[in-house]
Length: 304
Image 1 (cartoon, one colour):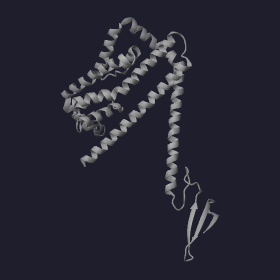
Image 2 (tube, rainbow, N blue to C red):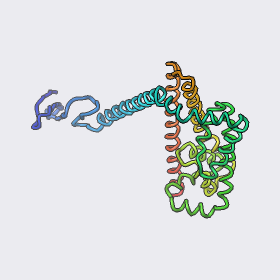
Image 3 (cartoon, rainbow, N blue to C red):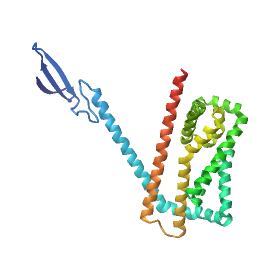
Image 4 (cartoon, one colour):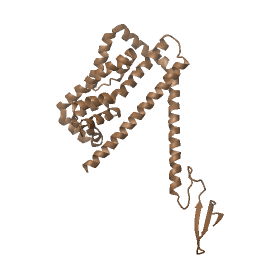
């Protein structure tokens, strides 16, 4: 067995391996385009596919983690800048006057009732209720704020469900005009109680419009109990994000009102909390979308 190293016409190195068999003949194996052993580039002449797949897979994984680190770093810097300069300026001009107006105009029980009513009734009018959730977190914190919001959400998702039954045929026509989007929300009406509960939960976590699904759900023939419980479970991440946002706004408002900047530990804690909140929301949303697509494919295979 002998080795020969030579240059090809294009200047790339070429390794020739001669193996002599028992009959005196030679079997020639060549390796060209660099001898990287399965890195991020290059290849092997005899078997080019295996090293390239392995190397590209490693490079893709490293690049994915690098992008994630860069994204988190950017979000952290952005949050620090907001907390240090943008937040206090915005608080002085907009947020603090609104908070002072609320506290001077409404008592705590009246404010709680107004927030509950807005979370319950705004979805019926196709209006967003997220700002009310911010105020609930800002005023009442995680404990009572969560109970206040979740109680309003029960009414906010139930009334459109029953009102939508009055326009059942119109909703069916709308779903037929948009078959691609309808194929996802129709999953909520398939299978037993648990399958419907799981599908509704994933739809609520995914970025499907909240107020639109409240009315369209009845057209998918989903039962009321899996619809309600799946909606409540799927909205828990959104509610906690809204409450956290309200608490963060209140913290910045108090710091600006007292004319002192946040301490370094407070800034670090708020930045870490902000990054964790955003990252968790993205991960959960991506998982929900992926799981919905898998369920959609499974449903299509069953129908074939």
